[in-house]
Image (tube, rainbow, N blue to C red; front, top):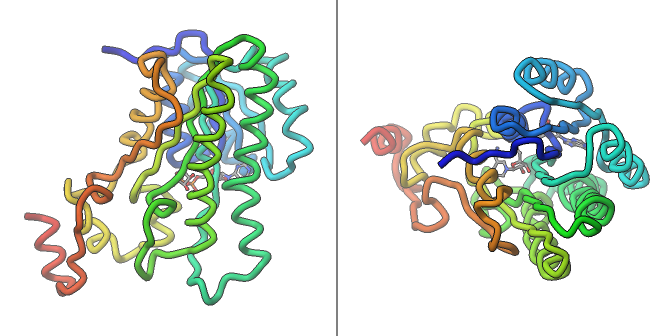
Length: 270
Ligand SMILES: NC(=O)c1ccc[n+]([C@@H]2O[C@H](COP(=O)([O-])OP(=O)(O)OC[C@H]3O[C@@H](n4cnc5c(N)ncnc54)[C@H](O)[C@@H]3O)[C@@H](O)[C@H]2O)c1
């Protein structure tokens, strides 16, 4: 069964690179009119040019933490591309910092993107384009870090808290807007092989892989394809849900912390 989005207007934040880019590509391939938003203007232009060769793509360089600009941005998208059917929100920052070291400014910077901007952009899109038409689908990005405590070195209390809040925002949005035919779901991924992850785990890829029951970290496309199912009409009666894409780590106790790096590497290959 093909997931198709023919002529649907699908907005993807943080789509200059990483999982957002993979989502934009799958959406273009499935017939959508794709709107790409990112703060990285140059990278966004390159990515939009690449995908634009295959289908309908419009790019809007935007720092989504400028909350006052989100209403006008959504109005522009509606006027220039069309009413919005799908909103997918991977845009986020993921700095690594131990709890003892996080400053107030760093805490606020993480929440500004991952939580506050995500809420206000969702509210604008739902309010302007989805409620008036009685339909629409939103998929927000949480993280495994928002569900469980992370062991050192991959821990960041502000990031984890911001991603836990995304689950609450998603459930609240689903509850409030169901009567208007608007669905809101969230994805929590484990490790995904993107620039964000590689900048954090670097040489420890073998160790991170050894923790995954299915034996590998996700590729961006693994997450993107699950997100597209929830965004699509195939999930027409699903809302307020959190779905996990992580190769089974959340569902299993997998802590080979007592193994040497060589044993972990062998375990990952076996
Ligand atoms: N990569 C992982 O292992 C992993 C694991 C769990 C959850 N996630 C989540 O998946 C999502 C995508 O992650 P990724 O690995 O593709 O990250 P990434 O860093 O490659 O991409 C994030 C994108 O968001 C954009 N962005 C950041 N701040 C912005 C702002 N203020 N305005 C507009 N755009 C902004 C960035 O420029 C970037 O293009 C994030 O929400 C992340 O928290 C990722």
